[in-house]
Length: 310
Image (tube, rainbow, N blue to C red; front, side, top):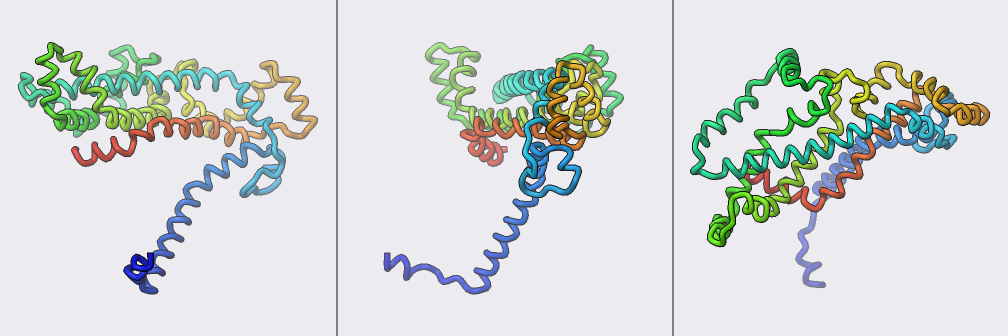
């Protein structure tokens, strides 16, 4: 221990000052990134009347759960949650299957027209359609006001497919050759050998697909007018930008919540539009934080593999 201590490189005062400066910058950056979420969470647990009386900084001044009671009575939020959850399950699964099948096929150098297919798939990366042309295409495919518009257009991603294909090409060829000798076909090799060995890359891109599907409201805004197919992000967009919070409070008066509203009025805890917005933000945004631990096991390895091999 004495030898190790004596061999340590002595840091100069300038180096220590630089480290302290970096730590302070990182702490300030972290606080700036985290505090908005903390502020929204605090506001969602505070009574509306008290929140309107003055600024709230770190903790609820008058704690209440009434805001969440009112928000969870909003029927449209229930249907939007179901639509978004289905989209976040079906979309990533479909995308992984399509991209993995394409990557496995294009990893075979003897595939006829391989280079032409790669060139064809690459074109949308450089030439994208406009809103009007995309809308016409979706209309011709009968995807307007159709749930499939959430999952079909994003099922294939060229960049994702290229990374998956590169990962498959880096796997030892002897694995597939020995499987062929044992009588396995391409489908069995794909399911029992290739797919499990690509799990880190698959998990990383599945996570990105879940996040993208959860946060996307543009597709709903452009292609879906049926309110029963609205997503959570679109409902949040309407509440923030179209004064839907007032509508929601009025709605709760006529949906069997009269007793609760009377109790809230008696306790002076009736939600205001401002705290309703904050509460909806929490309900819409925070569930995504619980998805990350399920992918964390593969996430770092998958991203490192994709970054190096791409």
